[in-house]
Length: 159
Image 1 (cartoon, one colour):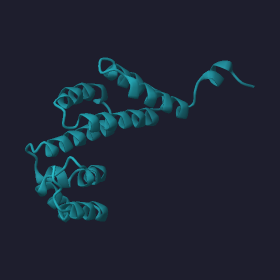
Image 2 (cartoon, rainbow, N blue to C red):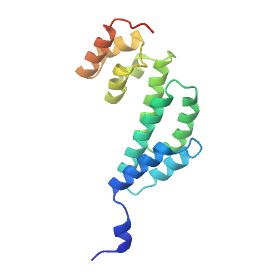
Image 3 (cartoon, rainbow, N blue to C red):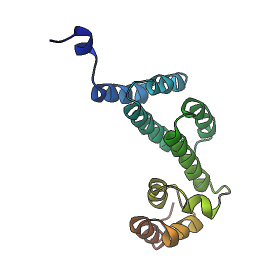
């Protein structure tokens, strides 16, 4: 026995893929509204995962772009009650800060998540000798320390 309304409702995997597609195609004007809509999905974990995927894609695109700050501030309002997403946006903002050689502290780097340390140690945007040295010495995992060490010891590439 099946209910036609239930049978027509896509499962969380289909909704996730649909959300990713919509988020990839959304205009800047409609982006925050769509994020808010996705986060209202009954499956909170799936919804946050879709928004996190989008957040990472957009943050990487905008990382050194002046538009990043306005985008991050707008997104912060949509995710304010989502601790994981808020932390991830904060970490992308820290990554931007380091990439642009703006002020940051060693504690910012050493207390950041494993994800952040992995991303920072391998990001082409992070060229700060100080940041890479800290990660090489105090990175939380062997992978982070090795990646940072390797980057520190690479010969400088001409631009």
